[in-house]
Image (cartoon, rainbow, N blue to C red; front, side, top):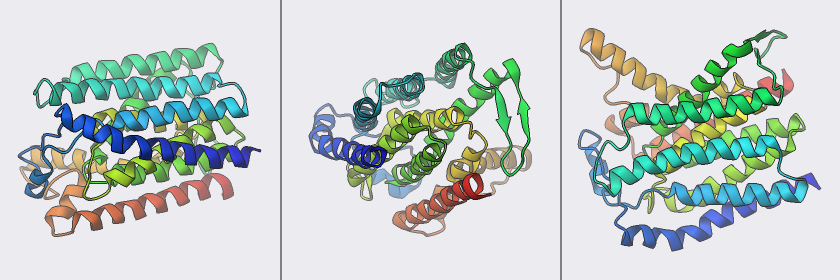
Length: 324
């Protein structure tokens, strides 16, 4: 029974995104919701200016409908499902506001960093409070050991750090056609396997729904992209994968499965530290995917390489958690 639910979930998630896109992309064009390209970015990206953005709306619709329908086939949606949707849609709303300000109001920076951070913190605190009311464990397990350490009420700060950190890390990864769609599909697929292994079937359904939704979106987001997901999609996906990791108590495994997101973020941090302390840049441009573009790699080569790294990270994370 559950195997059929999982199969139908990924098909449904894929089809909703794939079938919505041909209808939604012309609508975005008519509204002139086109992407503005940063002048300081790679010059090859300037030709992408005007490509419809805010396609993350299609991803969010697909995730929400697929998750609610398919968990309803299995059982009634649980508290964990509603929490996952809270984080996904909440962070997606922040991304939508950011995109809307950039595209419609023509303020290129969108929401200020403080506004975005405050919104992320509020959602994270609500997430924590609901968990605490349901006596959720505040211990963090260290992979490859039998050791766990109890955070107690400090767990709220961990949740804030994890949700905010990974939502921004995933957002940084969304810089090339299909890069985030592919890496997100792989990462959520890995968590679907782990959630299934833990008999947390509702979280497995949600993770598969996300994978299906982004794969359907990838049909139109692969190079050359006909639509971008924007912050609407990337912030939502980042918050969602951190929430999945927390609810399955696989918080630290996320560092491995989300290795591409971590590497991209570290490249930005190292670049800033190096430039401010020595006046020199480690990379030609950060995040890291832009560095490889500027050393001569084609966009497609960079994307496929990062997908491959993401797949290896996912396999390693599953291997550590299931077989070691």
